[in-house]
Image (tube, rainbow, N blue to C red):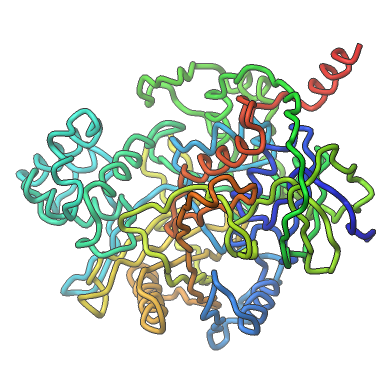
Length: 592
């Protein structure tokens, strides 16, 4: 590879996590000269997806170096389990398994940025709660709505009425601030009891996916999350309200975003991080003319068509949909496919190839043209090369802390621990009972969520354990197996023991023959960054770490847009792109 030494850039992005990669996507049509580096040899950072061999190397690397984000990593293999494992590359294990609600802000920007055509999404179907009983234990499906509640024999008639009263309230809770705002800092369980006469309902606690104990889960935290869950059900089809990206979760979104930036002229270098940053002499920047993009298109129908399952393209029955503000209109499936240019997933016998077949190749410095503006910073990379840049962007784990930096984003308060214990377990069974289609005309889900309420395992004082189970339809494991991603706020050895107990109970509850073949355990830390007046004008932009729960947080989109706006202060077309050939034609016409 040619040396980068002496090259100059408008933007230097460090790390290929989801926030940095979405920023690279946002800048891919801006005309800015972008250098995107990562100290690791794989894409994704904390959102990376690893094969078995890459996971072994990852653990070895972390255990031999001081790390701030991941620690206490280890791999456990069951006796005789290795013989049942497939080759290393048959697995795509996500370090940050993430479900995306259908109302999330991520889906519209994937469509408007023209990257949705390279991605597939699978439905997350059932939510389950673990229950201990005298004769053993079981996982119980969380009711999805009115019909499920009234069909549940475990609920008394009085409790069914109380639950329905709460569901009617939460559907439009913003319109009734007098009911909940005086209790916003009250534990949510107390709010349910005082306002609706409900005991601490495990099903409702499960829907807000809090990693903390009920006493630390406030009403202000729980209500918007339960409302988001309920409002998302049925948007793209009956029976589900969330999706997961196929082929390794957010890692696939990262690679598609980075590829778009590379096609737009961005330079990518893996295995090189930033060693030091020093101020460089700088004149006042001239304001460049910002390329204008077309008006933001209506993307609702394209989003509607993004959700695929193993058997083919998902068509939504409009009779099951509410009247949506986005105005999804009834069209034939053929018309939808032709208009959007999508191919039907799963029609070929062979396994589809991932959107990014090979990592974005390391490009040479010769592709970079020095910026016409004077650079603000001189940067030394870990290779020893020195480059200069006007803006430097990354997370705290990817940037040295020697100079003041502008914090992008705020720490989300309430039921969000700074550190969580996590595990990734390969299960010998497909656990098919978790992936049942429950709604007429619904799709076959590839993801399920199982919540072990606080105190439901060996210790009455432990926080909840959340497990997200992915089937082989996600492309993360071979057929006949599944992946269980577990998380809890309890840290240290106790946290890992709690996760192992939860996995054991999950396997025993429904499938006595299922076995944990292989497991990766680790702790993940999310650093909370403080803002300061001194750093607010810095052109070093440091993203706040995302929360550690399983749900994609729309604050990530807000953070990316805030960084993009700092770099392009006069632009107003965030993530709105035309087709590349259309853009080239418009540029040629402008030159004439």
